[in-house]
Image 1 (tube, rainbow, N blue to C red):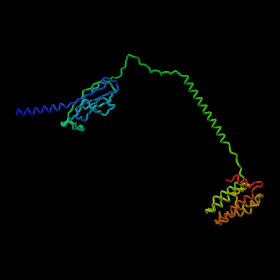
Image 2: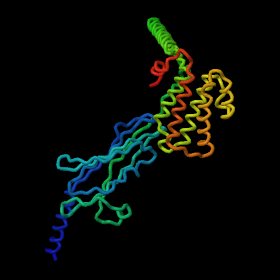
Image 3: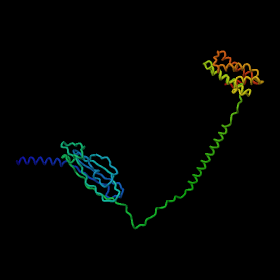
Image 4: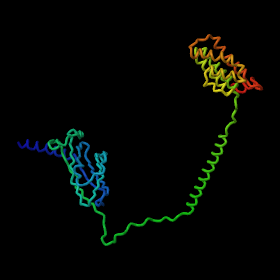
Length: 333
């Protein structure tokens, strides 16, 4: 029995020594002990522990009562003198005066029998029921938050008047000079623009194109379109008669576009300058009316004859003294 007792006692002491060999310490601190209302307070929790210890969920924020947490930084892990170090930093503040006490903060941890750190993930509800979890505490921290000191003996002073800055006349002169230069540049550019505009607005001399030249130019353009060759016979006859009627309006001062064929032929027959083309004009306009209004389908020779007749009508009524070749060469492009 005695031997058994000493055997158990010996192994118990070995187990206690192995546990006590696993050291851990936790310390809380602030950067100073006195603050004014609204000051930032640097609060730090530093935990030093052996590599075989695993820290579990330090609930530091739960212990920071009656004080505002401005910022919470991510924990910093490092190693110092064969020990692991875990540092938590917070920025706190308080907005009324008081003696502030941060109580000891519990730090929960485990010790691995195999000498390896265990996973720190654990639910807060299991801490009390898990016998493998141990704890240590930080120290208590005290500091004072002071209000601003107000002297009741001093007089209440009015707000200071704005400080008057003396006027620098050199700067004023420079600004005036810059303004005058800017105004001068604007006036100069405006006058130059106006002068250039007047030059560009000078109208080009108007060139009077004689009616017969304009009509022959129009017939040449119509001929190049080749309308009747494409099956557009009605369009061809409509356009060629409009050219001739416009010519009559310009050459003889007749409302040719508004008159019927018979009315126009009657006007031409009594006009001294147009009598000689009354017959050919009659054939020309009547053929066109058959195509436009009676849906007459002329043969190709009739279409060609219409262009020939139109040119004869114009050429036979050119005023005396006009050179057809020269004037057509000036205006036909």
